[in-house]
Image 1 (cartoon, rainbow, N blue to C red):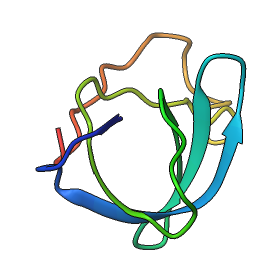
Image 2: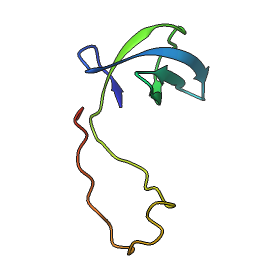
Image 3: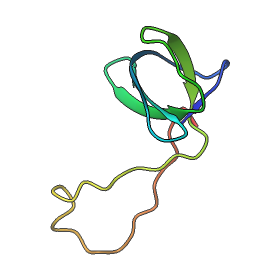
Length: 80
């Protein structure tokens, strides 16, 4: 997830903390909370546009518990 002025995902920064060389941003979008990192501090309440450049996902172990351990290819997000 990258900060991109032309990105299709819009959100507001709800928290910003320094983490040794970069800032961790918590961005609230339409019902989702996203975590992003930036090189510069961003004020809380700032509106950002985001874009997904390399989609990936965590696997839901509870849901997939009874399935075989064969990897399943992920479909790209509609935002990618």
